[in-house]
Amino acid sequence: MRGPFLLKLLLITFFWSSIVSATLIERDYEGVSGGITYDSKTNIEWLDLSFTRSMNLVQYQHYLANLNANWLFADGEMVSDLLTNFEFYFNPDSAGNDIYGRAINVKENYTYNNPKDIYFKHVDEMKVLGEFTTEGGKWTGVKGFTSDYSGNYYKQYMAYYSSNKNTGVVSAGKFYRAPKARSDESFFTYRVSTFEEPAVKATVAVQSAVQLPEPSTLGLFSLILCFMGLRKYKS
Image 1 (cartoon, one colour):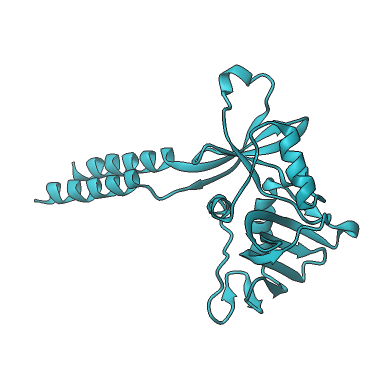
Image 2: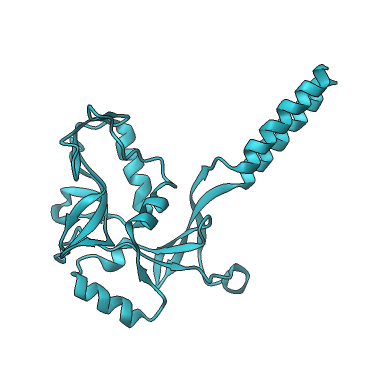
């Protein structure tokens, strides 16, 4: 009887762990497919970076004011929390090594020469937040300013690569620059969601974008139950 009992406990553990998960969901916005990325863990909606591309700071501030839709300029802590939904690895070791290869000049931003395939996979997953491609297609990826500033310079988060895939560029909020309305510059923009799916389900396209398991207190508690149950039946 021990085997079936333990199996039931393991199934309960799996079920609880599946319930408590972080999910990013794409929603249409202003006629743009996937124009919003909804984070169900925080109940925050993120405006696609493409909406604020090629704006300087004044243009961006005017854009938010004219939208009158409760959109706000996100700070670095919020963006950092958002990016934890992805598997991207932002912390090379002291020698610059990580799962993508060897990072060079690990300071405010850093580069990879000939990064491994997993680098492109992880960058492409983040493109759900708003992909940019520079003129001529030389660079592609994700890049956006946050509201954290020092003087006239604002913090950026970025992960992108060259068209020939021999170079990757990354920064996890240590890179400060002045917004200059470049085609590869955007602003991380968010609002608290008031979306009520049953009322607008017919007009808003919703699809699962990213689903990643998240360690949780419930999952941990269920594992403890398994252990206690096993000890009980052994005694």
